[in-house]
Image (tube, rainbow, N blue to C red):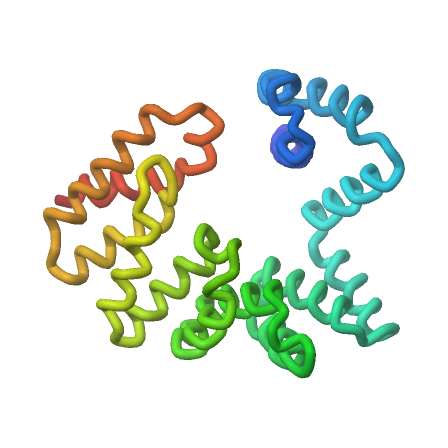
Length: 245
């Protein structure tokens, strides 16, 4: 049973790596179905045809190692930071801590790096927002989000959603709703719209929330298999909310 389980997870990891690479390279029409329907064989063919180019192969190998043994990856990053205390090494280790769930360690590194010329670093600010949200430091999210609010990447990012949630959690529902409404477009923003629905329920606006959850579920029926897979969690959660009524 353990061999079957390991084979299954390795197959999923290979598929994820290949699909991400495939989309970035614009090869999805040619390769995506091969990767999905021939998980291991299709992935191996794709790797040797499209990825086996030295530097990219090293990146893929490193990525697989981090997934299969995250503790080893963290130890390596800790050693790198001890050897060379640079901003890049601090953030790389903080990101690894955050991904591993060691949020307080991540926050300490992010905060100690949030100085001088790096106070406006977008990646640092985004990651710190995510970390603060994880520990409920909503007041601290707001000034950071306002620093990157006009960044082109912010509007569709998860940090925008966390900013809206922080506004609501800190007693600013009108501002929160304004942000939620900017993320309420059809056929997209499924996570954001799900949380907007919860916001509406907390405000006693059950009918509006029901319409929103119904729209999410209905749109889910018309998505491609890939889009449906990417948004399955939020479509499923919207169904659960409807079933509670």
